Amino acid sequence: MIAARTVSTSTAVSRLFTVAAPTLLCRSYHKLGSDTPESVGTPTRDRDETDAVAVPFLSSYALPRMSGMSQNHTDRSSSEDIEWCYDAVHRVSRTFSLTISELNEPMARDICLGYLLCRVADTIEDAGHLPPAVQTELLQTYSRSLEPSSGTTVSSFHDAVEEWIPTTTNADWEVVENAGRIVDVFHTLDDHSTQTIRGPVRELVDGMAMFVDRYADAGGLRIKTLDELEEYCWYAAGTVGTLVTGLVSHEATDEQIAQMEENARSFALLLQLVNVAKDAATDMEEENNVYLPLELLHEQGLDHSDVSDTDNVDSLVPVIEQVTKRAEGYLDDAQAWLEAMPETRGNTLSAWAIPFLLAVGTIRELRERPADVIEQGNVKISREEVHSVTQQFGGDGDPSIGELRAKIRQQPLHQY
Image (cartoon, rainbow, N blue to C red):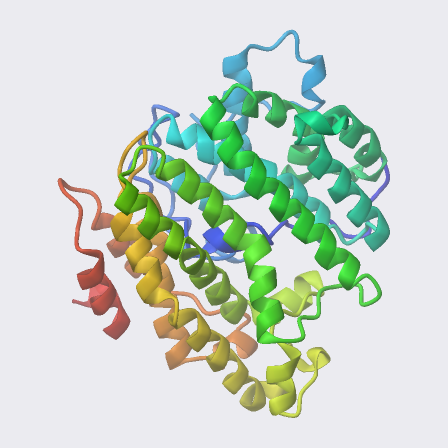
């Protein structure tokens, strides 16, 4: 192993679920048998580990951080591997672990494994110490290892990535190191789940490899056009939306399936574009990635290098507003996706409605104070509003998503 120059908190995949699963008061965690509440935080793109309220680790959730590839786990039980996966999600993303906590089995396990498979690739893509050529090769090897007929095994991926794992690892790199363990648990899922998950995950990984290679000379992503931004959003989030849709629509009616498939992309791009807008400055500062399209920056006399400079705030505001407007254009179809979604196989409306409603609130804040993206480094909704949104799903029956959306669009929900 080598020491990393920088160890990035992996973020690209999690863009879909940043507003999707904020660190907030967790009513219960059904996998853990715990109803210990977490501190209420605000939705961030998985930077909740660094820029949101610190969340005490759930003592009933904590499991030993076991390293090593799964092909050597003969002394471990299948149940230990499954619990390790739930624990791993919580450690790399308290935000996404909440989405899983809102689900029941078997959906919770399916989503957990799908997320971790994506997270392995996400960490490779965001690794600042990896040369782009190495990143591309590792991502391609990982993608092939997920296809049983490819002849490439997850052990091959581990052999290739091992020398690049930092000597001082964080939770993200522990997930990479345990990719074989994750894949082993993935293979215990039923055939429908494995087939539904594998295709979108491989498309996501291949898309990441393509973008890393495309901007290898720049040392980070430098999105040029709105069309390219949405292309990136597709690979980072749309593929995950396809994965989720395939899982939650397994026992749906033909009408429900058609409506969900038609609108899955909108649900994913809504969440992704909201995060592109709200995290524009920190994306550049922390990852050296600029997702604000160059064509929009040029309209204001700016370049990619100007994005995090507070002296340019007046010129950057119109760019933030345009990306926010683009996100807002997906709200109707995203709501249609939610309203068609069946609550079967452990799926729940709250798991996906909460991120949608928090995205609505974040759009409201972006419209009211876009300059804060540059001056403050982020735009967040309040803890009180996050708590109020989650409490809408605490009783019997599901609330009206349309009515909640209309309220949140006007003012924070807790102020009514």
